[in-house]
Image 1 (cartoon, protein in one colour):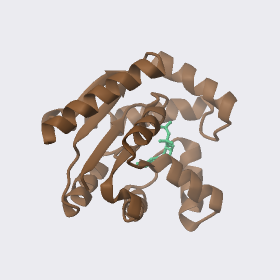
Image 2: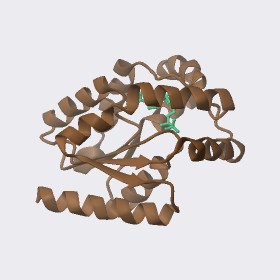
Image 3: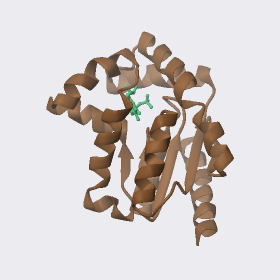
Image 4: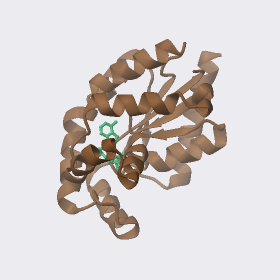
Length: 195
Ligand code: ADP
């Protein structure tokens, strides 16, 4: 897998928006575990039935289930050229699984884009999205829980990826275009480093 780009940041940071723009410009698929799980819920698969109440509570779906789902997605043809990971890894265990999966494919995490946004702005954005998109987990209570889970389980990944030298922190509290320009520059730099 030649390109493994990871987006990481709190719920509402805009990482999905940025991942989708980058995927279009690089022609590498965006792999969003949140979207994959929502599609399982919508289709009523066994995984969807397990995931639904967990997602509605703001908790994380168990690592082994998410990792199995991710592995299946990466086995699809379009992912042979790489993937832009959005919402995975979310725990230290998932980061280890991702490393192992990429190693098997002869790749590694090339760059981790941390989209940093202060809490007050996040809550405001998520409440707005609740009105616009009507996502089941965008209620006030669930948002608070998702932020708590993010801080406890996902935020520690910043240290991990800072140590490996892959982390690039981007100020996400700006217009989509401005964030996208920094994302593009960071990816360009990382790819030059690899070449
Ligand atoms: P957001 O980043 O806005 O919280 P996502 O669409 O990435 O939204 O995720 C929505 C929900 O899906 C999460 O709150 C969690 O329950 C579940 N989920 C998504 N990705 C993962 C993952 N990698 N591990 C465990 N649960 C996940």
